[in-house]
Image (cartoon, rainbow, N blue to C red):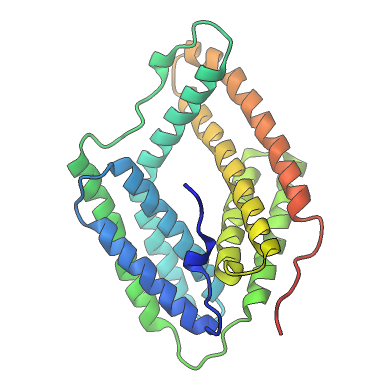
Length: 281
């Protein structure tokens, strides 16, 4: 699906506070829509719900300087609860897709596809809708509370300063992951790269061609790191299985992780090779 950075971007002449409130309401309305029963594919809708939570977390990070600390902590806790409701479905889909992909691309004989788990943990569309409904209800209530707790008249952070901080944080995470080569550090980098993507879309989604090119590059980075994490999730699944499936899949997953590390390193070099240009007046 093609990205539309402008959907969650500040509009020309719009203050940060105005834009933040407008986009919070957009997320709230989308969460309420996802909370309703639907005949659509529950797996796809759960995926959309998880992305909505990640974007909302990113918005919270942006607004942290003006949010009362107890409310910030409470909102994070509620979003974590909502995400956990859908975590099993996310991991099952990631494991299924990753193992199917490496099996289909492998030239090795007798890849045991029967060992690959199903991509859905929900047994019916009704069960999936109920699960998503509980999660999105938590999200909607959290957004309403955040909106009510945002202080009016308080000085909001400069958009470019928050963006710069996200940029530097992702850069440091990447340097650490590439140095240690630890899966946990790559996962942290993935989260920071996702946050950077959402900050870019918020602050510069209607920016110059150079801004949009950077958004595309950062999106590619976080997607690559997401694929790497899917390999880690698949490995964790295999550790609980019989020796034979591990024997077949482990070398394939290691090879895929190596390719993804190389790609992430090259994307990082392009993204962080120079300082982020400021647009503040």
